[in-house]
Amino acid sequence: MKILFDTCIAFDIFGKSADFFDSYCAYDVALLRGFIPCLSVSSTTDVCYLLHARGVADRKNARSITNKALDLFELIDNTGSDCKRASASPMADYEDALLAYSAQREGVDLILTRNKKDFVCSPVAALTPKEFLKAYKPQGIEYAEADL
Image 1: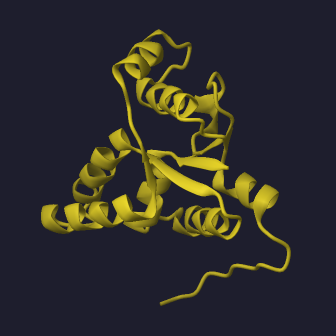
Image 2: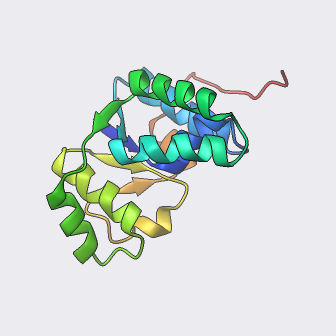
């Protein structure tokens, strides 16, 4: 099963945002289940930008963190055809539509996002990290947050 991680989920993980825990656990469950975690090529630029813009890292470290993401996810290309389909899509947000149509072309089975309502018209089903964990977390696996 191929799982596309929306930009917001990748930022949660690499930016250690307030939503880090569920997003990270979803990534871990994907690996435990043998699923293929994917990231859109267009998301890599957004994650790098957000890491710097939101003060998580300076430009050099933002690029270094983003570089690590390249090793942890299978990258999904965005094509001109994906752009045209996204532009004509009933999906309100162009960026989300581009992710959805690129995911469909690449045979992605599921999109993980915090903004599920933005993917209502998506050709690929979407779940939040909490929903994904509820559906796919193996029995006997428990996660707990720790103060570091």
